[in-house]
Length: 516
Image 1 (cartoon, rainbow, N blue to C red):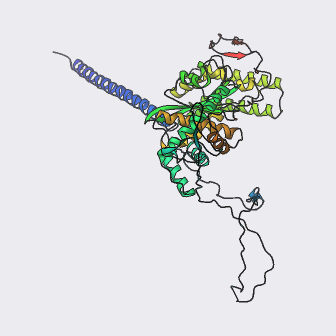
Image 2 (image 1 turned 135 degrees about the vertical axis):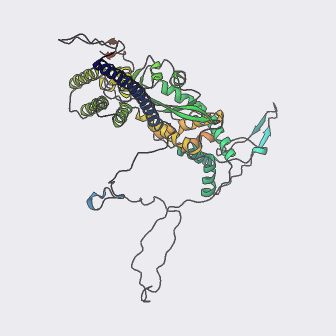
């Protein structure tokens, strides 16, 4: 027979075992719940990151976020803060003069009106008129060899007769090219403008075929633009999505100081970029940090600081206060680099001071990247910065070089707008017409030339002609502290990180290089 105390002890032991099992089951349940919540949290973070990235892709709608709560009132400011006042200038010529007599009697009291003076008023108007020219072309045959010959007037754009004897004039086609390839209107909208503005009836297919013939004549000029871009000292490069036949392709742009070249290609890799600039391009290349651009091994690179600053700002917005410190510090360091560039440009510091301050910036970035990161956004940002580190401050080592690829962004903006309006090209022949005419029009505007007159002269010239767009090249004033055309490229050597006075040596990325 067991003692009462032993029975109570056994009962207490069984109770504790049941409590222990219950707690174990509760602990296991909570552990699984924790794992589920962590997995859910990671999934939501990935979806949030993907949504934020998708909002910045080429096909995303234009948006500046939420409007300001206290925006500035629209319109001009009153009083002296109005700004510079301007009005339309008086025309240099008058094509039509009209007399405007005053009323004989006062409209208020019926009294006699006495004229005191005559004041001019000008009106600038367009003429809704389509001019039709008829060329009576003499056609003959050589009495010796029997060769076919026919006359050609300087205003003609083609020798076609018979079924193709009704053609659009060069000025109408030049306007159509500007509307479709530069302004961004679709072929249907271009046809509508020509009809409403000038009474010219033309179909979309008619405009397309005429622009294709114009592009064929401009093809030699386009090839020379590519040659000029490849020989330019500095090029800004970028790419964006494009559509050909309803399928996704890529539109590339290379901008130099003299020319702008567009190219529509089926891919987004180094092979496509090399088609534009050539695989052995050895000038200065400014881009957004996409890794394919580093396939230009002979080129000197500058990664766009504006892209990195924007990425850091977005990271700060979605991260916790502790996790956002790294992105905020990187953003401040890059902004300080831009301020340093401006101070040197304003002659506030010397070249030696610029070099010393640049070294301090590089050391500061080294210190930031030597940390260990656990937040996924910081891990990705640090990985990208370690790759871009040798190419972030090239513009400080070579004063006069741009720090961003803003020139390429501006050049590609009209194409992005056109893509949103009419979606791209239906055929690869249309894509070829697109890239040729866009390059010619953008280069002409870049050089301050009358692109309308250039296209008119191109169509009236009997045969192929290279336009006056590649007869000169302008290079930016990069100081002789870095590479000039005709001077040797400065050698690169690995930058060694010295040990600190106390503590173990820090490991250094072997790909990090600086100019000496």
